[in-house]
Length: 173
Image (cartoon, rainbow, N blue to C red; front, side, top):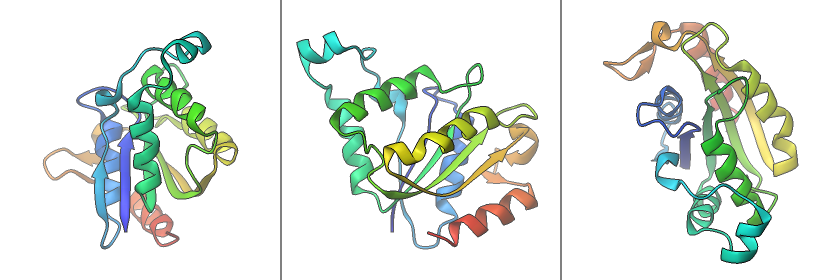
C-alpha cells in the first residue's frame, strides 16, 4: 500500500510532520512517501495570478502525489485556531485543478500541538470540510502535549491510549 504522509506546517522541525510519519509507519506493509510542504511554497492564490500564470507546478505535484497514493495520513498544524497559511495556499491552488483534491482516498486525519488542546480546532474544521473535497476519512485523532507524548529519540508516540485508537483507525484502511 502506497501511503502519502505529511504535516501541514512548513516548519523544518514540524511536530505534525513527525506525527504523520509515525502514524504512516504503523501501517503494516506501507510504502511511505513523506511529503514536506516546505518544498512546495508558491505565490498566494488569487484569480488574477491564476489567469496570468496558470496553476503552479507545485500544485500539480501535490495533486499528483495524492492521486498516486493508496491512502493518506495528514497531521494538521494549528495556527491561531485554523489552518497554516502554507497548507491553505497549497490546498487552494490544488483545488483549482479539481475540487476533489483528496480524490476519494482513504485518509487518517491527525493533529498535535505542544499544548493541551492538541490542535483540535483545526482538526474539527478539516474533518467537517473533508467530504466537500472527496476525502474518505477513516478517523481523526488529536495528540495533545506533543513533547510529553512523543519520544524524539525513537520517533514514537508514548501515549498508549493514542496508539490504541490509531491502531483501530489503521485497521479500517
